[in-house]
Amino acid sequence: MGTQMLMDTVHQACIEHVQRYIDQHLDEPLNREVLAELAGFSIPHFHRIFTGCTGQSAASYVRRVRLIRAGQKLRMGAVDIMAVALAAGYESHAAFSRAFKKQFGISPRAFRSLGCASATTLLKKGSHHEN
Amino acid sequence: MKISVTSVSVGDQAKALAFYTEKLGFIKKHDIPIGDARWLTVVSPEAVEGVELLLEPNASYPAMKALKEALVNDGIPFTTFEVKDVYAEYNRLKALGVTFTFEPTDMGTTIVAILDDTCGNLIQIHQIKPGSV
Image (cartoon, rainbow over all chains, first blue to last red; front, side, top):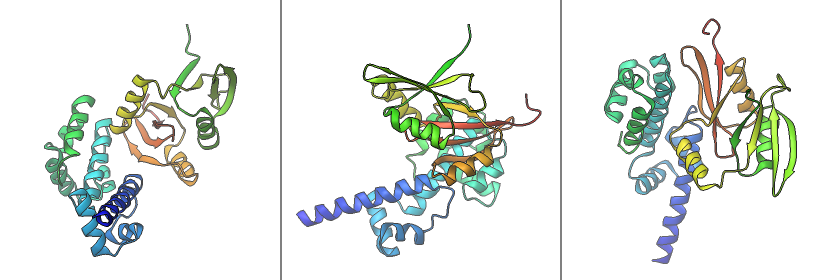
């Protein structure tokens, strides 16, 4: 029992390290190979540990954090939604809009028209949604 | 009445001074001991007689601590500094190991980027696009 608790603690610390890396390197490649190597696990083991610790896959976490950053840019008034979409890893305006609306319940264009307080509220709500 | 001093909230003044001078490129202006702290200000090398930035050691004050954490959690910068070229500054600072929370983004009249000052604040740098104002 003690050994399992120790392993769980080590895994949790490892995954938190990976999450911090993701948060600080959002504009760099964050595929499963990169993240598994960072964690020191095989890809399948990394997937099991990450999902077990966070309740979502690493790919979902990366998508969610990139969408939140995209929302922050729109909140500040970014004019080029396509540029925001590309930076978030989407290859088309349509794909980005679908993902954004699924995450935050509102289109990117409508989100950009919100005031800072309303936009921030949606960003916080959306940060808890599965993508 | 004129604006001669503004401030950014920090905890460790020595750490803040290192970041604001060695990374951001400001110059130390005043460093006066006041009790356990210092009246520690920096200025832009482009305006050495201009507005001073006070590295204010109030980060542990409960209200300021809560404010700083809330701003960082919401991705909102504490303040903003103007630069001539956000992309060039972004590349320069990235090469110095500065972490950005978002890369240069066109906001219409300005281009902005946001960095982590390692003192518990997000700092925006902005460039006013020609012909905007």
